[in-house]
Image 1 (tube, rainbow, N blue to C red):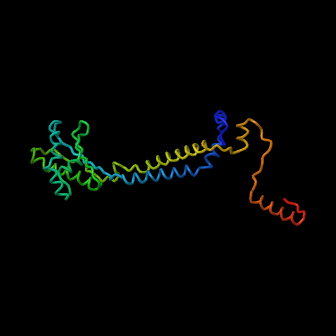
Image 2 (cartoon, helix red, strand yellow):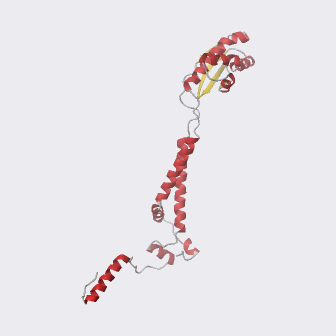
Image 3 (cartoon, rainbow, N blue to C red):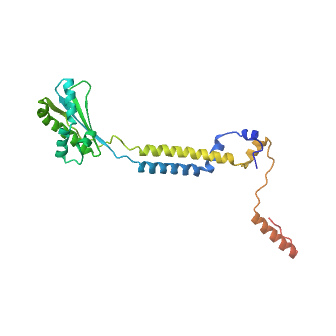
Length: 242
């Protein structure tokens, strides 16, 4: 049965109680969508999980003018320094590969230079940063005949990854989206349901007052009563039926 007319459909009043009943009737849909969305997000983030990276930094002081200091900074990442670092720490990489994991920068306009190492192992990152500074300090007098370099602060182990996993935020956002999509589907299914669900809805749609209702007839009980009545009539007995 249809909703009679489009005008009658538009006449439906929206109230919190009716919304509650609509959601309650198919709330399992929202739960299902929430679980599926969360599970999908978990699976996706697990399959695309990034390797955690860690950083550690050593600060050194180079007592030279800015132009000369820039030249010295370039030498920090040069093969002559990094090959010795690889050898002394027994690293399974090349000087070019190690150079890609090292950044050297001056702190503001000071003589302090920061050597930062990025690695998949936090302990190794700290060791490489400190060893790079040590090798540079020992080699620079031989290369540039310059000795005014010293360590200001050594690198320490930093166990917090710089690319911290975003798996939980993704799962939370996906679950919220799934729940919202489930609620939306519940209302869509309700709007497609043309059945009249209550006396109040009839009164509202037709703008008339209900004066009586017909109870639902149980066909099974009705057949039993009819069978008993037929047996009674055949026997000529009179039995009061409920």
